[in-house]
Image (cartoon, rainbow, N blue to C red; front, side, top):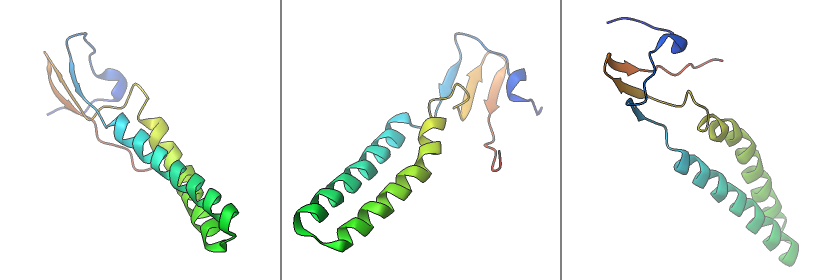
Length: 96
């Protein structure tokens, strides 16, 4: 076993990648946005103040979810890489 930095991992066109799901992160963001929009619309039509709180919580969750969604579209978004040189596993950083 050998520890490598991300820049030291050999790249090849024939490599197989295993990614974090971009579709799942995008779908989660769309769901949070739909909940916030529906709660705002319901609150404005009925005057229910609870709907505005639900919209605020959904918006805060969407803002916290933003970094997770944008990180899925980076080139370094891979968990495993299978190459001719071996199997590479990327350990996610907890604190960047």
